[in-house]
Image 1 (cartoon, rainbow, N blue to C red):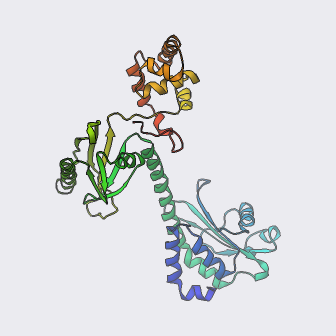
Image 2 (cartoon, rainbow, N blue to C red):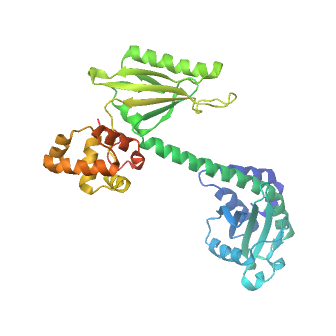
Length: 367
């Protein structure tokens, strides 16, 4: 697509700009088209406020490093004015082999947005048509950059929540407004994968026992209707017996607050929390040492006791004498600030130790 094509199909170019902001490789499709149309070798968009770089987007081209060097040299230019290299003081001396097309703008939040294109001077100077393209694109580029920045912020926040949910020793299942499964964390996958209590039936969350499954579905539908019709968000709970009477799964069902005019098959409306009565997590010993000032031997003892072992069983498991274990436990109590084993386990559970678990470490769920 050449310059004249860009001007004749400007609406398509704008559409491509907004599409490229949210695609898998943000900005690159749009930048590739614009670089080709203007004969440019690099493009950069930067957003600044109070000398802080808020966001930067640049083309994936070999010349981008050269463009970044020039940006440091020329700094800012008059706001709203599309300029070429010949119109910027000393730029020809800094880069006689390159031409620049530049514009600085202010957005509604008072941030300065700097847009730069660069191409070889052998291609000829940027024309008035090139300047016109830059001027017409500038407002759209600011809006697209704002969308992209908001998307990055939401994405980073979502990544934090996703990571946290993956580390919790608690199954979490998200359902839509008709009770169908949208997604779940790894702990829920483990629980449902055993097929001995709470199970996945296609997109439906049900139970191994038919009566339990009906009750679970009734509670889910009650929570959905209460939230929709009454704007009530009281959680419901139940206990499901596992196959063979091997304990229970405890279920908490809570509606999520969403906009009343927004719904859909991929919009979470209900969170179902699953907890196993005998499930615990094994914190990384390194983290226990750092958090509570424990020795390696003390951290390994805490690790066993958090799993529910008595001091005697833990000493046997670790190959230590009971006297050694008792001495180490006394030191642990002093460092953690507790007096009983139950208090020690509670202190570990109430810490952030579980959030450091990763998939290549021990399983979150230890049955």
